[in-house]
Amino acid sequence: MKSILLIGMGRFGKHIAMNLNQLGHQVMAVDRVEERIADILPYVTSAQIGDSTNVSFLESLGIANFDVCIVAIANNFQGSLETTSLLKELGAKLVVSRAARDVQAKFLLRNGADEVVYPEKQLAKWTAIRYSADHILDYIELDGDHAMFEVQIPENWIGRTIGQIDIRKKYSINIIGLRRNGELDMSLTSETVLEDGSTMLVLGRYKELQKCFRI
Image (tube, rainbow, N blue to C red; front, side, top):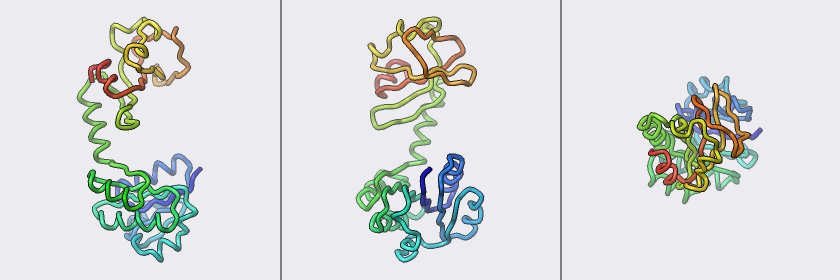
């Protein structure tokens, strides 16, 4: 369980709070709008109404005591940038800030952000990949070069073992799990048979995954 400061209770911030609540983390929510704080109260440990660009207000929160500080402010990049910078100055251990464009990410990283997230950009890429190929069921980008996909098993692989298709040797791709009837099996061996109706989780370099699965 981690202690997390979440600043900005717009739609993105609210969804983060709800998911952190489900994961059992302690969350303090901050927003300058009282109505947003009222909406989020069922999902957070504590909440404060205040201006995150005010250094005195941030100091009162005890920034150094949080494991992670997330700046989820939308439609006010100046406020996001100032908040990010102040958090780092006040001793934040890890600052994660939201960006909408690459230029915003550069400024945030230069001014205190340890990491930057692009909710719209990341979701747009996921949607493009997911719905432009019938056999792709899910997708997670691990970094600029590597990704994990959940894919339908190619028809000519059905009934063969993982060792027989040997995509690790051909493409440096690892099959890390099989999903059967909604249940995930990750205890695979080279003798595991690829069954009809199953899907598989594959991990590797994005370019090799594209080649292998015609993405």
